[in-house]
Image (cartoon, rainbow, N blue to C red; front, side):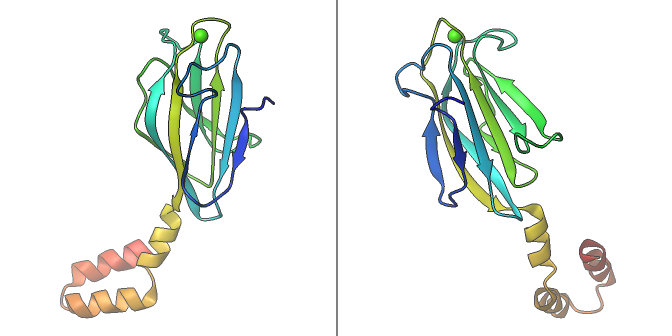
Length: 158
Ligand SMILES: [Ca+2]
């Protein structure tokens, strides 16, 4: 594993970049960035800047985003990106996310500047929403007469 590979577990949001950024990344780079959020949280990436050598299938230089950890067999490739086309946000479905950056032996660009943060997972949000006091307050507020709302809450929090 090269010197551009890092494990990120610090809960404070921070930025990371390709090697040498904003100067061109080196030839033959291989970087694995692993993100591990606390249990119940997701990893959220925000792409601030992105420029790699462009080819139709990104076979020369690429940034690949995986939903899941490097070791787990069930990690899923979200996509491989090059040129300047990449979504602005990525969010893991669980607590792990993996980025793999590769460059070949010629033609280099400035690379990327990305922020990561850990955000409450859907499960945590759901649990909060279904907190007993909160549901009681909502039902009081809506009134018992609105049975469709009650049904909705019962279904959501079942
Ligand atoms: Ca290249």
